[in-house]
Image (cartoon, rainbow, N blue to C red; front, top):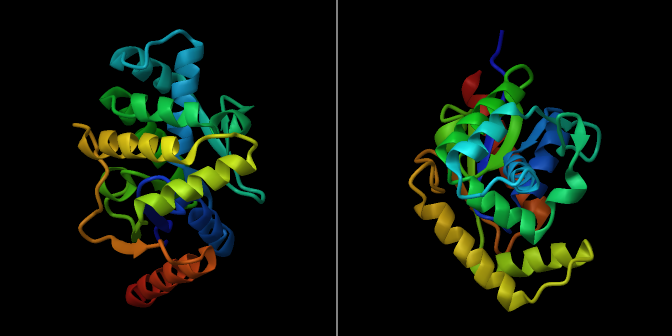
Length: 227
């Protein structure tokens, strides 16, 4: 029996990872696992429980008790935690900041990496995050690392938040994103960096359809090589 197809998509925020992952999941009819959503949920639930986001043990214990799943019907990738839909709560700057804080804890990452592997075990998946190709699935069939110019990334995030009715200053958002990048790339445990065998895609001047076609070409190339 063929092993389930695992596609790893890594990169910082604002580069189009989620749009690409959803597109691939729909085209290939496999689940989409948004690992960033899982960290956002842990951060928000930790705050709601009165757990300090600097508390490695407390955040880790919470993360280990949670059950995650993602709804497949279009649009794919809608998160539930312990059966509770959380999509409407996690798409805010505050949730992103909470995720960046708690994701640096080894205990949290260990709990969520195990959960992510379980989610992809049976049917495979498209997983997007910051350590998919380096930690979660280092043997993934297809590894993509998506980047974009920092200002363009901030503009995309601003446009997305505006569409959700969240008003933020573009310059403030750019500074917040830069600080988050620094935390993500310099943390001691599972920092953000491309896997050595990842295909890099600079999406700065590419539309979503162009990025998707580029990724589908890599999947086709892997399938041809695997025959």
